[in-house]
Image 1 (cartoon, rainbow, N blue to C red):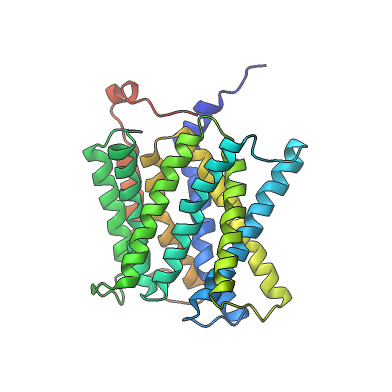
Image 2 (cartoon, rainbow, N blue to C red):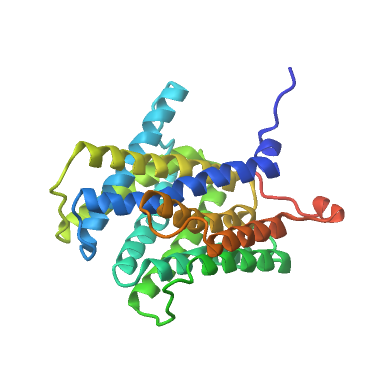
Length: 319
C-alpha cells in the first residue's frame, strides 16, 4: 500500500483552505458566543478582571480537552518529553495565550469592537514581517504584501459602520497583542521541527489559562452566576480554542506563515456574519459583507498564486 506523504497533503492548496476556513468559522463564532457568555454569566462590559477570569477558565478547559483527547487517541498520557520542551511550552504560552489575550481584553475594555477587529486584523502583516525580516523563515515579497493589503481592505470595509479614527490606550493594547500573536506563530513554527505541535497547543492553553484565572481573580474578578446554559456555552468556547488552534498549529508546521496567516482575514468577516445570525446584529446580506468577503478571497488568491517557474524556487519550511 502506498504511503501517504503528510508533508505534501498538508501543503495542498485545498487542504490549507479547508482547514483554515474551519478555524476561521470556529473563531468567528467565538465573537457572538463570548457576548452571549457575558450576558449569561452577568459579566458587565467594564469588568475587565472578570472577563480575564472568564477567558482563563475557557483556555484552561481548552487545554484539558486537547490533552485528554489526544491522550485517548495515542493511548498514552500526552506530556512534554523533557525540561527543554516544558520551557518552550511556557515561552509559547506567554505569547500565544497570556500576553495576547490579556492585552486584547484590556484593550477591548477601552475601545470599541469595530476598531478592535480592524487593529487585530493587522496581525497578518506583523506575522509576515516578523517571520520574514526577524526570523528569516521565508521571503518577503511584494505579492504577499499586496494580497495582505487587499484582504485587510475587506476587514476595514466590513467594519466601516461606526468607525472612528481617534486612537487611545485601548487601541495600543490591542495592537501590541498582535505582536504577541506574531511571535507565537514564528515560535510555534520553529518548535514544530522538533516538538509535537498538538501537545504544545494543549499545554500552552493549560498554563496560560491557569495564569489568566489567577490574574483575573487576584485583580478582583468573580464569576457568581452559573447555569447549565452557561456551562455548555463555556464548553463550546473551550472546544473552539482547542480545535481551531490545534488545526492552525498543524498548518503552520507544514506551510509558510504568510500562506496560513492571510487566511486569518476571514476570521473577523465570519465574526460579523455570525453575529448577524446569532445576535441579530445587522444584516447578513448587506453590501459591506459581500464586498469584504470578495476582497478577502481575492487577497488569499493573490498570496497563493504562483507562476510555474516560481513553484520550484520557493521551498516551504517543512516540519
